[in-house]
Amino acid sequence: MIIAGVFSFNGGQEYISSKYKHLLNEIEDIVSAVDANQHKTKTSREKTMPGRILFNPKSLNIAFKREFYQRKWQNVKVKCDYPTGYYTKDYEPKPMKAGAFREMDFVKEGLGVEVQFGKYAFMVYNVCAKMTIFNKMGLIDVGLEIVPIKEFADEMSTGVSYFEQFVWDLEKRGVSNIDIPVLILGIAA
Image 1: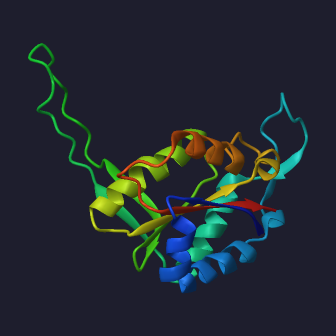
Image 2 (image 1 turned 90 degrees about the vertical axis):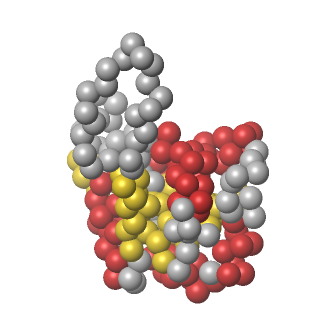
């Protein structure tokens, strides 16, 4: 695979290039090590793309996990203890199921990485909420998001979001005083 697009949110490219150049080089190696053509499947989108062989996002995620873990990146999970003191007096909550957590795909030396071949809402959430939370908790300094470009997303077996859409939203939203630096890499097969 190749890096086909680069977007620096809140100085992410500059920050990572200066403080984490060695890890950025490692991530570039990971992207090129994943052979997208090995992760194709017959489409389940029979009504819209019957009989087509398309890229499988789940299989691509597994390939990225393998490459990151081989290079000693760690998955980080944080337990969520949800507050219950904000309900109204008229509401009696049922006990919440145990096991709620937030997760960062890969962390190494303070650089948090998310690989996103999923639904659109997670892309903006990752940058504008999750990475900020993990930074505030002292788990990461800076973030990096790996997403498909539109041309690549259009060839996937499930509907996924893409780099161009993500960049447009971040440009229109602007940077907030709580946002951390994030580098977004758009990848192509």
